[in-house]
Amino acid sequence: MRIANRWVWAIVIGSLSVIGTGSLAFGKAIHGRWDIVSVQGVNVLPGGVASAMANDGTLITFTGSGTFVAPAGGQSGIHADGDGDDLRAELGGAAERDGPGDDVCVGDAADGGDRGRGHCSGRNGHAATSSAVTGGGRWEIQGFLGIGSASGTYWVTGLVRFEPAPGTLPPVNDLVGNPDEASAGLIVLRLAYSDGSHGILVISSRLVGAPDAPDTVFEGITATKGFVDFWRRLPPINFPFFDANRTLFHVRQ
Image (cartoon, rainbow, N blue to C red; front, side, top):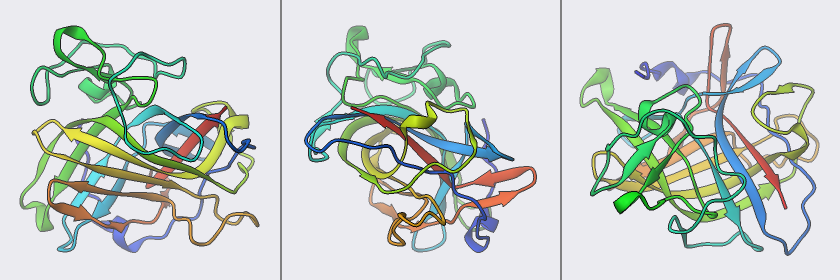
């Protein structure tokens, strides 16, 4: 799929954020799912887009979703090298060799389907996703006036940390996961890009207007790719036929 130029994102402030939290016990592992979502009326759907800017205004845009297991305390340094988890994203579609080495992306991580679902496998068909992390999607970079454009797929290779945040899901139709498991939070993921580069994806989810949602929590993403830091997150926007920069977690223990 082609992700259109979204320079208008930098100047438009969204009117709705759809993130909530569940009640989690201290000291237990968190099984979760992350999504870049779309809001259509009162419906929260998978298949959204989110962007961030580099220092010179170059824009990177992502689609995607995935799952993770964060041990007690948030955890760091978990890599995708184990067996599957019962929260693994639904897979489908043809496999595609679209990255370094012998990695194989399957499902929507390979074909760029709207849900952004899928995972990548390592050599000889062994899973490169694990009980720790799965997921991926598409990326696109656009320089000023479209100069220096590039695009491809990415997959998650490791979990750096996840932290749930306060908040309650507003009265919307959560068509992504179980509404009772919806959560605000912050996750840091390691990525491999299909052009051979590596980076970090930071996904932050916030419930705007909730009395227990800290103002320090933002809604959207930031990312790195190689030596470039796309540090300037863009705010959520909500047009009648287009919205962007929405994220959502679903978590349980």
